Image (cartoon, rainbow, N blue to C red; front, side, top):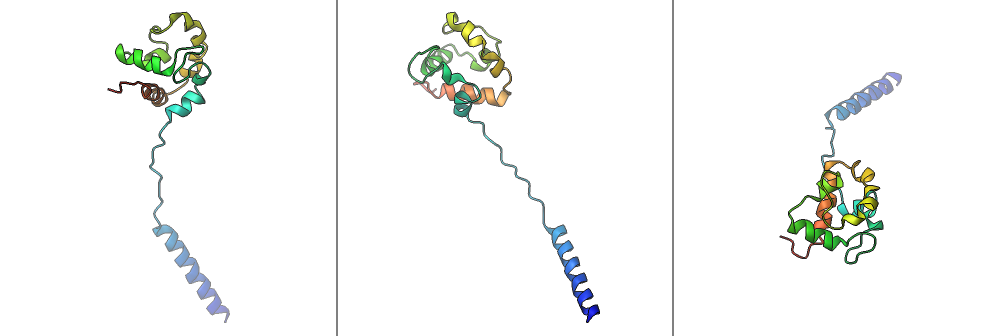
Length: 125
């Protein structure tokens, strides 16, 4: 009886080990898409000064999108502080405080933020 139990346990152990070895490891290869809206309203804190259709502290998102599209200028370059302000230079000093946030963002985040802003353009060319 003991030999039978030992043999059964042995075969179960072997079959479990073989099963684990044959089971492929699955790797989740999905890419997490960064939401420009989430960045705008969250990490970027842009919503504190910019609203969709009206100017509060800074210009509206629609105005930003319109002017940057008309001038074919990069919002990303501005957020990296690599280009001059083109909409309201008098508010530039206020905006400078947020450059510490935008400069910490990676390229994908900045591009997502730019795409989100451009989505407010009434002329989405």
